Image 1 (cartoon, rainbow, N blue to C red):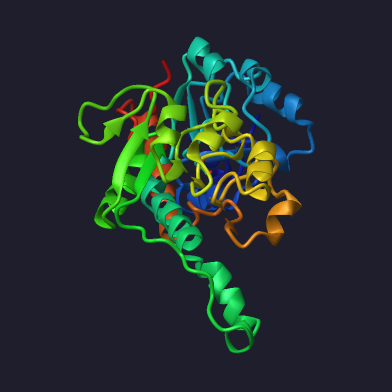
Image 2: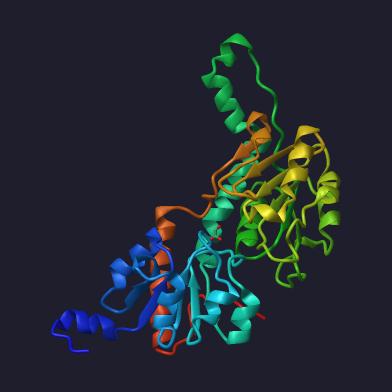
Length: 331
Ligand SMILES: O=CC(=O)O
């Protein structure tokens, strides 16, 4: 095809990066690197997605994705036989068919290192809030009850509490570091014992719950962790026990958790993630021992800037055959 628009021709010649859906973070990436990469937007094409992918099947080596929106399925990967790299702007990988990526030799770069500190801050914030009644106290004061009713219910001390971290990855380690400074005793459950930490390891999550005052869920969602925090684990955590979830909603059996909270079988919950977002079980709205947050633990402007740089770094590394800055293991 003859091109007389030089800039346009130049753009077409740049390495291609595919996006299936619009995303504010992809827009930031593009704003800073449109001179280096040609961003193909399936969502902006009049063609149906499958047809758009077929049109570019031979040339697309990189796909940008996020955990919001439709998953990266075997069917999508099948339509992209030249794909070599999936860059996801999430820490979680539960939206990706990892086995299919493995089978096709598609490398994955994620954002888990970037989000770890911010997510850990929110995990600790939720823990403090539930245990010291911060949000509930705020409502108490605003509603004028300090004047009309007097004292508010006591919270419990943070120092000395046994905190069981489920998933000692980037996020879990940051949670542990922060809560150690509060004087908590850190325990954990993970796929494998970590040789580089001295925290007590529990191979069984139910045992961990039975030995913890608080469980902080920091692991990824996969077939093994789906509903891993079931009724048995919740009952083992016990009447005073608090659950904090900054992983994925479906790691906890949400229906059982709601029942346990309603029956007083666990002490409280601080939740940034839910099974059916953005829908939150309504029963939770009336509970003062529950703190709710709209899956925003990772969302800070600082994080977005770092994320933009990380994505561009991965794209540059890939197209110049260098090691990827944030490749994840997919064995
Ligand atoms: O939930 C957010 C993420 O996985 O990054």
